[in-house]
Structures are given as structure tokens and as C-alpha cells.
Image: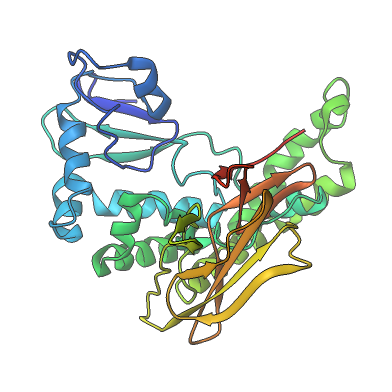
Length: 351
């Protein structure tokens, strides 16, 4: 694609730009494990990781202003247009993967290159399939809040201004007339093959569903645009910690939620033995600090749900989720208490 073959190119598999010092190290380090490294980042270019490590050190150095780090190591316009495109396309699975990062040989700058866009514009198709659309934090800017680089960028006015400009520019380009014209052009070519042998045997939609989805693509972009605008009016998502035991009490704690408008945030905390929270063991509203203390629990399985609400009344849920056979239970952390009173996190159960 005309890139510098001697440059640095990494395919991100699962990586939130944390430092990961025990994994991200020089290739000649005796503790270097390429398999562990490539679980995070596949090496597609020069395997001298000096430049990558320098960038990650800067991203994770909170003594340095985020604006300074962005200016030195990234092309802000490139990052903004990359994020804006995926927000408008509803390609949610880009928080920590499905992207390449690239840096030419004689430059400190890193650039984002998209790949694997097969999950974009799926909102209405998922709805037909009865698939959960989550609780909203995967829409708009909040989708990127769990990534240290993107979170630091979003907290800066310079990047938010660039992102707003990119979203508006792409929104104008992805007009209803343009999208509908492209849908007509491509469906005319593709649809006869989809609904004839042998493809029809694996067609995920009926013909009427195909037409329904095709006609709704432009409106889906508009929905994603409105979700982006709304995402800056709600608290950002957060993580719930595994409970601890202190001085004969169980301490439940979670990260503080962030509000772009600096509004006061209160929390609702729930503890239950049921993931539907039909019968709460504890429920506290209007909490000002992200902590609740309770009695020691008997052995068993428990669920925590925390909701953050800002002064305008907009709510946000935690990043955490619990997986059951019927799908994900969003905003919920599950844990066990064993016979010895030890608290163990349960991420999910399937099957």
C-alpha cells in the first residue's frame, strides 16, 4: 500500500495502550516472549520495539500533558477521522483491536489504519436477530473510554474539537442520498447471487429482511451520529472492582465515573444473588463516593450492579458484564464466596 517497508507496523489483537512491561519489551530481552507479545500486538514490520516502547511510556506518563503526548507521537487528524468513521459506522469492536498502528522509519508519529470492518452497520440486523444492543456505552465516545490512549485524548479539547470536525465532515459525506444510491447500485449486483444457489443456502436474511436492512442503512448512520452527540452528555463508563474484606466487612468499590461537563455524579449500588436483581440484598441510592460496606457474606454466588447518574439525570452503566446462555447481562459483575470466605471473581459462564 505504499507504506515504508522498513517502518513499524503492528496489528492490534487486544490492546488498550497500557504499558504491559512484562510483555512489551525488546526482542533481545531474555524474557521476551513473542507469542505473548503477539497476543496483544502482531509484529508486521521492524521488530525493534524501541519506538513502540517510547510511545507507550509517554502515553502512560500522567505527569506529561496529554496534548503534548498527542502532538509528539500521533497525527491527531488521522486518529480523529479513524474514530469518527467507526463511530458513524457503528463498528463498535474497535475499542482495543481491529486496527493497525504504523510509524514510518524516520518519524515518531503513529498512524491508525482500519481493518476488519465486517461488524459495521449491524444495529438493525442485530435487532432482527433478537441480539442485545447493550446498554449504550458502546455507542459514541464512551465506546473508547476503556483505552488509556483514547481516554486521555478525549479529555483534551484539541482532540475533541478534531473529532467533532471529523464526525461532521464524514456525516456530510455519508449523506442519505449517497448511501441510498450506493445501496441501490450494489444490491442490484449482489442480491441475485445471494438468493440463488448455492449462496441462498447460507443467506442469513430472507429477501424481505434484506430489503428492510438495505433501506435502513442511511438511517442507521443518523442514529449513530445522534448517539455520538448524546454520549458527551452522560457519565463515562467505569469498572467495578472485585470486593475485598476489611475489618470484618465486605467492601464494594468501583472507579469514579467521568462527566465531560463537570456535573456532580451519584451512584446506585445493588447486590443480589440473582442476575436479574429481582431481590436485592443491598440497594443504596444517591451515593456520592464509589464505595459501599456490608456484612460478611455466606458462601455462594453474587451479582453487583452499579449505575452512575449525573445532575442532568443521564445514566451510565459499568463496563463489566456477565455472560449467560441467553446473552450478556450488561453493567454487572459476578463473584463467588467460597467455603473459606474467600472472594473470587467470576467473569462469565457459557454452555
